[in-house]
Amino acid sequence: MPFSDARNRSAVSRREALLTAGSLGGTTFAGCLGSNSRSVSVLSAGSLARTFEDHVGPAFEEETGVEVHGEYYGANAVMRMVEDRTKHPDVIVSADATLLRDRLYGEFTDWDVEFAANSVGIGYNQETEFGQGLDSGKPWYQLALETNEGDIAIGDPDLDPLGYRAVQAFELAETEHGLEEFRETMMDLVYEEPEEPQMMAGVEAGSRAGAIVYRNMAIDHGMPFFEFPDEYNFANPELADHYATVEFTTAEEGYTAHGRPVIYNATVNDGADEPDAGHRLVQFLIDESDLLVDAGLTVGDSLPRPEGDVPEEIDV
Image (cartoon, rainbow, N blue to C red; front, side, top):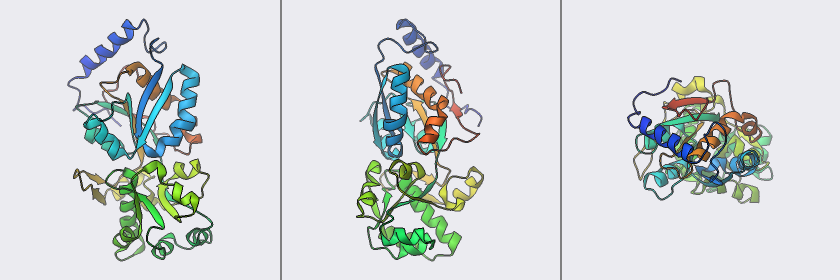
């Protein structure tokens, strides 16, 4: 993907500031982290909570001696926290690359790197009637229509790209399978979970039959995963135009998200307290793709992919 040319008005001053900070610390980013960097703060999409806590964080600390302090929310909520300065992270990670650019470019950053992909489907409890039906090969949408209210969870679509992707998947499935008013019926049936990291808790406990989740979330919890067909799993870049035929507009902010492939991207906040450590962590995400694959993500030949005025400290 070519670099964007539109949002580079303050890039030079930012880069000079970063380089000056590095030189004052007696080191350059290319060599090692500044001697004062002992931690780096991350505000990330909730679907990567286990990825950072169990995989990336420990490996990064072992390599650099720098702890990763992560907080995890729906990516819409992440952007809002950055915008209203409720949170002040060094590194910002989104489950929707376009969302980050739409919301943060210009004021908080002017670059990002796409580093991993994912797919959407159903994590489910095999002990439930719904789960047994999936295991026997029955169409998931017929089984879903037979569930009781609240048996299936989705993320809150006003807070979380996973939530609005579930709604978009229902709409695409409605067309794909000729299901009249399927989206509307499902929205009356599902439970909207406001805390994305908690999506799997009810499924594991058996109080919910399943949840519309990303593949890595099911793997994190050792749970069976039914992947939606390519037509609505948001995993196939070649179907980007097809995904874009559906959209969702958030109620509170009026942000309209078109359907698009699931791509994670990361950037360093312009006002980061630890910019050197932040850049090193983004570089780590670029370099350690095997770690991400082990966590259940996908890193295809097209990734990593830079966008915007990527700093010299980042080698993509």
